[in-house]
Amino acid sequence: MVSPFGTSLDAFRDALLDGQSAVAPIERFDTTGCASKLAASVAGFEPTAWVAPMKLRRMDPTGAYAIAASGMAIADARQPLHEDGDEAGGIVLGTWSAGGQAMQEYLSALLRSGPGGVPALIFNTTVGNAAASQVGLEFKLRGLNTTITHKEASGLAAIVSAVEFLRQERASWLVTGGVDSFYEMFFKAHDRFAVMSRRSTFSKGMGPFDRDRCGFIMGEGCFALCVERVDDARRRHATPYGDILGVAASGAAVPTNAWPDRAEPLARTMGLALGDAGLTPDDVDVVYASANATPQLDAVEAAALAELFGGGRTVITSIKGALGECGASGAASCAAALLCGRARRVPPIAGLGHVDPALKALRFATESVVAPGPIALVNSFASGGALFSLVLRVAA
Image (cartoon, rainbow, N blue to C red; front, side):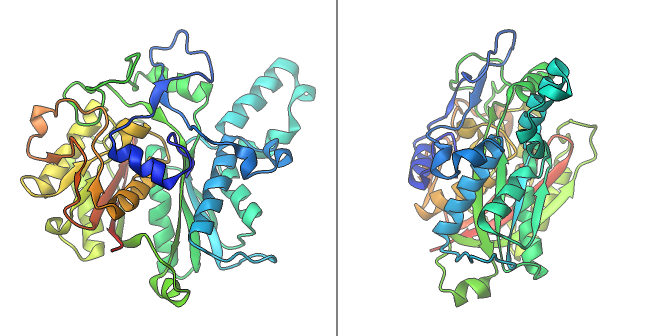
């Protein structure tokens, strides 16, 4: 991972379990005139440790994040790489923002100086599939190379897609997950939409499911996993973090950019994932919710969760008070479920001060608690209505 808590898996896990938040005032560009001034920015990342300086000139931050996180995942999985390339390995990457920063720089130079002033080196990075392509080139992955974009749900959408590709035997193993890097125009567009929190400092009351929540905070980073079929993993004596048991993709009929406004499509998507896993709601120990402190999304998801898990033992958490919202968030939730699950803990919801009284039927993680068991459900629901759920079992 390349995250606001750095690149260490242990540091990421410990920060979440401690209830820390990486949200802070933005420093990379001037936010004068913006109502929103906070974000969870990547920290502790030196791109030249993973990417040669000459290559960095030809990519935006999403490319560097993706190469670094993918390389770490491949090494952690002890997945062998071949000098002449690997046709059985590939990448399925989700993103909301890849290509945007390079496009902003490219068009700004074009409008300012004309065709002669355009930085030709970054032209290839102005497309959304650049980050995944750069990973494929870097590690000579000659199999599937697919980019998925479903806004905030992109990362989990990619993992769900990767599982289906493996089931279809279109690859032996895949790097999958999500990557995003916010940039000035992207941030300021969302500031104009008035969808982000307008508070000047992060504090209690700003977290998902809080009664005083007031909008999401933007995040960024890359969270990559290596996934392979169970039989292949056994043959090479791999030591997995866990098993993906079931996946589901669905949709809610809503206007462009609107959050889902009914619980039924969300509950149906979770039910499809559980059915794919051969499980029932009673089998789920922890839910990593999509909730991001947006009043409508949190309320609708909570209603769907209450329909399935209300009054039960299942613990509900969300990591977006710690890491913000971005196209990599669903992949980050999978990483959190696996890493915190191996520690037999559930991370608290950062910034949750007082649970919304309307959501009292659910058991929220207001502090780090013991995980009731190894089964986790991960949700990622996007504005615009794309819905994804995944069920995993943490390895013993």
